[in-house]
Each structure stands twice: as C-alpha cells, then as structure tokens.
Amino acid sequence: MNTFRIKRIIKCILSIIALVILDQLAKSWAVDKLKDTNGIDLIKGVLQFYYLPNGNTGAAFGMLQGHQSLFLFIALILSIVLLFIIYNIPNDKKYNLMIVTLTLIIAGGIGNMIDRMTLNYVIDFIYFSLINFPIFNVADMYVSVGTIMLVILFLFYYKEDDITNVEKSIKSVFIKNK
Image (cartoon, rainbow, N blue to C red; front, side, top):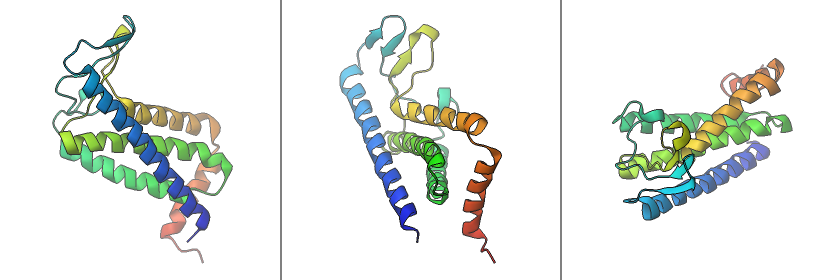
C-alpha cells in the first residue's frame, strides 16, 4: 500500500465529511427558518432563500421525479468510483485540482443521498428568482461547481499526456505490469 495515497484518501474523506456536514447544517437551517414562510430576500428580485415545499423528489431540475432508489444507487456507485479514481491518481501536484473537483462532486452526491435516504426527497432552498432558476441547495452547488471545474480542467488545463497518465495509473490496478 502506498502511504501517500492512503493519506490522500483520508484527507479527501475528511473533506467530504466536512462538506456534507455544511450541506446538512444549511438544510437544517432552511427547514427551521424558511419552512412555512415566504422566504428571505437576499437581493430583492434576484436571489432568495425559499424552502421548496414537499422537497425535490427528482434529479437536476426536477427530472425523473420519484425514482429515489435509482438516485441512491447512482450516487453510491459514483462515489465509490470517484474515490477509487482519487486514490489512483498519480502523485503529482498538477492533479490536485482534479482531486478537489472530484471531492466536491462526491460530497454533493452524498449530501443529497442522505436526504433521499432519510426524507425520501431533497431539501432545496436557494432560488435565483431573476431568471426563475430551479430551486437548489448547497450539495447541488458542490456537484455543479465540481463538474464545471472538471470540464474546464479537461478542456484547458490538462494536456493529453496528463489524462493518459491518470488512465495508466487506474489501469495498472487491474493489469499487472511485466
């Protein structure tokens, strides 16, 4: 076992736990302060904290309403796969941003998975009223920011050789080198 990789995965897991706690605290606050109210205007006509009555039983933008088991399964499998990738990413500082983005995505998935498991819906409470954007939560921000950052990294930061090195590192787990 590689000590550096074990330390990396422990740091990631601790970061995920901290991010999930922040998400759950924000959702708890939303339930306590926003439920059965008209919400709180942060910027009138632009941004509001508004508790979504009955929660969100769908995925992004309310798609696939009522498929909780599917979402739980996907979140669990994706979290395991992304942790596996984080563990196997080469030991090079240029991959730190990739690790951060994957950590954000995992934390967001787990934050919403907790809601689905305990409530059978996700608590959403952040609303951009200016553009009538779907109501979302902190975990959704983790997933969105992580995904956007990952796309930017792949398009503009990492070179083809960098991605090939990650692929080789992951494949080496399954294929023994001669």
